[in-house]
Amino acid sequence: MQIGSPTPYEREIPLFPLQVVLFPGGLLPLHIFEPRYRTMIEFCLEHESEFGVVLIKEGNEVGEPATPCKVGTAVRLLDVERLPEGRMNIMTGGEYRFETLEVQEHLPYLVGRVRVLDAPDEELETALESITTETEKLYKEYEILSSRLIFAWHPPEESPTHPRHLAYQIGTRLRISLREKQALLETVPLAQLLTREIEILKDQNRRIAFRLMAQNN
Image 1: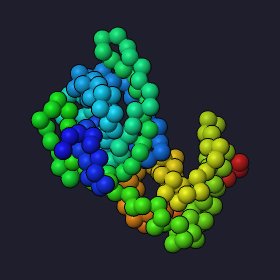
Image 2: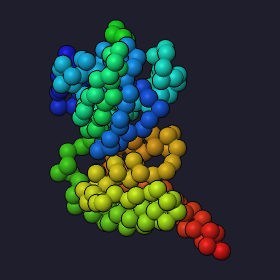
Image 3: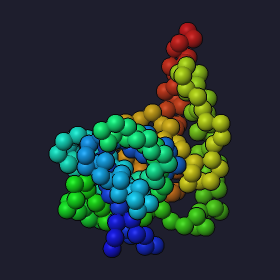
């Protein structure tokens, strides 16, 4: 199988281990300066391939190849700004969650054989209606409370109504640790993901409301 050539559920894509957890629908700007990743981006441009953003489990972003977590998000290149000495500023957009089945190290950068995790949309609508409604309510409250607590906090102009897109936006916006975000990313059944986000939102909303009350006293 050639890198970037899709099958319905499995494909091979370059992997980029980072200290970042990205959800589908999110935007991620990156400055590319290491030769191995400049080579990787050139490959993606030439072959119109996505690459996988994966949280580092062990190691560092720079230097020896890091050990990535198994679940990550594939991204597409949205914009490339070429800089002197082969460096680049790129903008990427999250596409889909994947699980890494195998990591290959025969190239300067890692390549993963990955399995697409998300189920088809038609399986979602009616079964998740009530849980989506509760999640939407708590998430709107979270954005309002956060904007009152943090001066530079700007809620999105629109919140998604599709349960999957809503779950991904919440994962992006929550102010929690990378490990907690990774745990959300790895929660594959959408009902379970929304349920866990409801728990986190309830806790976050209580904490923010308490801090606001303390500020006003």
